[in-house]
Image (cartoon, rainbow, N blue to C red; front, side, top):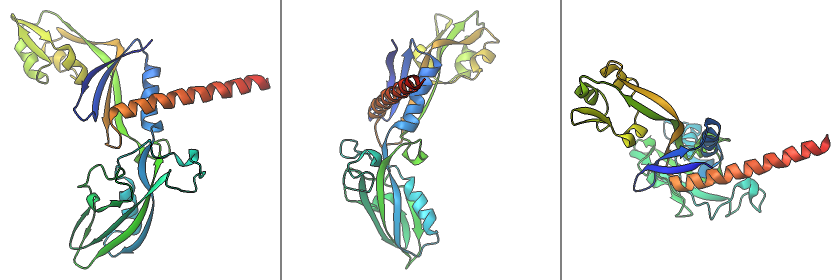
Length: 267
């Protein structure tokens, strides 16, 4: 049974570090891929540009809008393929957004108006286009739920992992050199001896700094545990992202078992 321990989380739960014990690389990587590829988020898919006298082509503005992260309400919206409308478009699987702006000035994501107040740009100050005096942009966009395996604009987070580092400290003659060479708080000197902060070691990459500064007396080894880092892009918080990733893993496993049984029945 895999054990999960929260190492560090920020107040808004947009950055999360977890420790996975009794696991292996294949499972941890499956979780990583489920987060990147199978967690649904909201993003702009279609753009109808009615006026555009800016320096940017219509396609460039549409592309920039598609990459604007939008807050996501998974309770109110369905993936188009799983919606009752069969993907034709309805209030349960899409939301309309509009943008009307006139120069001079920089048009930002804060000027995008949504029909649903729960679906809005995560970062209001994101620049869309710069307009000169007299230039205008007027458009209507459609946002839908999607997943990262279709397009990266639906990716909910940056996620990566590493083996849990294990430090071994030998006879370090000049411990202060190791303390100075490494990130603050990773090593300290107690009673004249070099001591490592295990929690800090989980969240930094020493890249050989300790080994070099200690002339080989400090060595880093890999354990069988893994440290996973999740940084949300803001559509969902890390807790929601992990819950959806686990749900997706369960669904994928059930689908695989079903296909396997069908294949065995044909033999």
